Image (tube, rainbow, N blue to C red):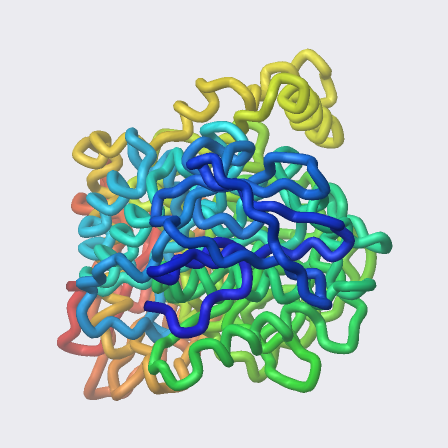
Length: 623
């Protein structure tokens, strides 16, 4: 039984359940139990109301009345079985029996992240169905699963960024214990589990926090999605504690291995200690001495070194999403030039510069950004940069949710994949990427009719700035977020993994991830990874890794056909007694449904199309 009850929500303590909620301006707060009892709560000097109620067992429903208004769900509810507008349920997280063994987490330099959305990862869209697929991710070579937000939201389908019950797994995905089953199964398979959490705004429907206290919202700041949160104004202390408790409870009660914090650039805090630094320290303090490895990862487009460099008042998180590599590759291979892609030229030189230092912008002026962007990444370990060629945003924020491989040839997609998975940065894959899934990932919601109309109109209006959608009639063809078909179209089709070209693409991902895990030249654990990367010409990248006396050289052609003469490149140099040997190519028959492997006559490689050739130290093979 928990010795030190959490501060908020309903805490089951055996003989009684403690209800605790913050409402500093209220005159009365009552808790109503589903057996008809209504209990007046007591208040302390900080505005926290509390009542210890006997004969309340797990599963009991309850709600609050504030100054005779209500009923309202608990802002710190652990479960909302009837939805975000219904009563809350008492949950005992300590009753779950974990069978994960001696799992304590995973080192960041061994992490390969697989981002997934529970509702569309499987046809069923549940924690249980997703748990049944985890063994296939482990076999693929994934080491960490990142869940898009699961905090409960209005309706039955949502990306998760409209969450309002931030302590409660969405009931459409399953129960709290079914989420624990998912994590337990992942740990049995030696997979870490990260959760995406949203601390920059509340969703637009079902956020009752303002009923309990208007101080949850900032009077000075707004977010791109509505009212900002109060991390630096009057009575901001309990608000900061609310979100810190949320983080700690996800990590403790569900034994998660880390959190990905959404859009941290939109968390505005002008106090001496930024909320992110406060949160990071709160998490470190909560788990000090437990021997667990917990990672906090920021999504932040500002390229700020302070996000991952500890220091007084600095955030000091473990890693940060670094999208510049995605933007350079998308510009290079698909030609995207609208919006933030205006700040990227997609040249091979820029791709190499980005890959070599973790992000591209390190203080230069960025026209679309509207000023200097970024800071010097020198001294930041490669694994602290989370890079990708696809993620939920970069697919789902496109008008039709099309993936990179829907736009470019698979040969070029394999070339981009080679770069991503052979770099020492922490790679992230988006669900279905490993088999070049046919399904899009579109933006979907299930709001009430009035709000839904606004969301649909807003979605189509935002694409008016793009040249391709200047015609209003064409904008009307953008999928309606409220339509059930938009959600259903975004579900993965697992059967296609057994058909071409998906089967060979899957083999290619398995091979590269296997190399990343087992080849000494690519291993980074406990070492400073050796990386040499250069633009050979305006279409070809050379990437060299070495460790423990073993070497690997990737020759990656992103565009067109042509011959590559390696002899004059410093990266091709090797000891006379250990010449390069050909390992494999991305375009041979086991990896390409329409094979067209390059002709290799070292030091020449003749490409018929985009692709990659992997060379190894003498005696090494691509296995």
